[in-house]
Length: 215
Image (cartoon, rainbow, N blue to C red; front, top):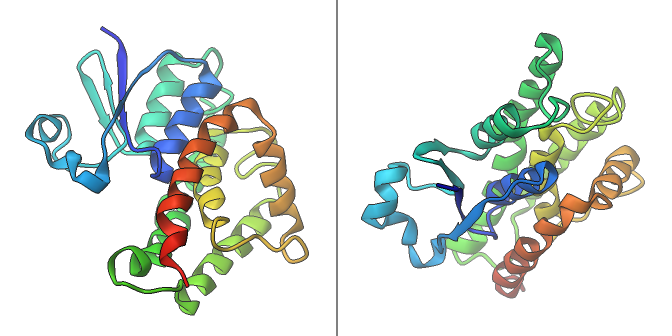
């Protein structure tokens, strides 16, 4: 049996997993779950993941939900080295710290910004939501003032997960290169890496879904 990933390319968490898969050069069967058509509520999918979220990984019957858990699992099991998710206690803790930041502050600031447009008929992202995104950018700039990457001086899964979210934010709110030069440099560096190409289709589809709703 093969590894299967249930995904929806417009969703940033799914794209972070796709980028890690590309970075690890893994062969994975991709099964698209169209959230717009509520395919995540199909009984067969709910049997795999009762929380009806994507991405969801099926590794020969072993099911993993949520993007951070998936990328941790993939690097631990299939990584040729531990560079993306170091086994050293202190280094791994720094990576986990940034993953917690991404899941508790960075990604929610994106989700709360787009929700009024997608679900409440808003025709612009509310100013207070933009302020939250700017606050997230300030945190990232501070982190990148200490190390070259978010958790270390080398690339880790924390960077890839944050990259998926920030690249989505850029669709409607650009990172100011005067205020956040280190963040801009970090983005440019990561976007030049080969694995980033798998992020592009989802970015375009998110753009096609979201931007026509704005006025």
